[in-house]
Length: 235
Image (cartoon, rainbow, N blue to C red; front, side):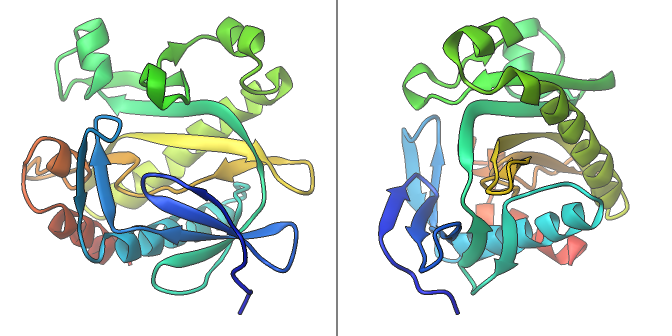
């Protein structure tokens, strides 16, 4: 078992710790649920364990499909071991169905399926509410290496292909999801952070029931119940 040492960072949903190996970190998933840049907040016992388990499963599936991630292995209910990465300040969002901010920004009707996946870039900055950016913004603000953007887009679309099939086979629509990227110790670019119902929109294909963090955002039902349904189907 790796040794948990100095706390490097604590965010809204996770704590990052050093280990005895410089290139390896421990992510500890918190039970905190937040929405609207932390304006809405609650402690939900068991949320951290659900997100850790779901993220670990998804990372394992992606690695089997040749997608590079920072994931090494799940350590405990709420902890995973990951590679230390130089994180980029860009979030990559892939949308298959209109929901959330794209409805407000562009007037799409919620639930409208796009002809092809829509890939968008956002500046990772809570104070500015993660604004939409173009590639020129990314270059001027030095948010990520420009040479990495094509591979980030390509990887995001591959993740979409893999996860859309995974969830579709389990009766779930992958509406959209967010990815974060960084440079891994071997110099390659890989996915970092987590991939869980905190960072995806997932709708039941038959009923339309929302199984993701929108349950908490908009008081649509028990958050943990939705996350458990996702875990049960993909396990």
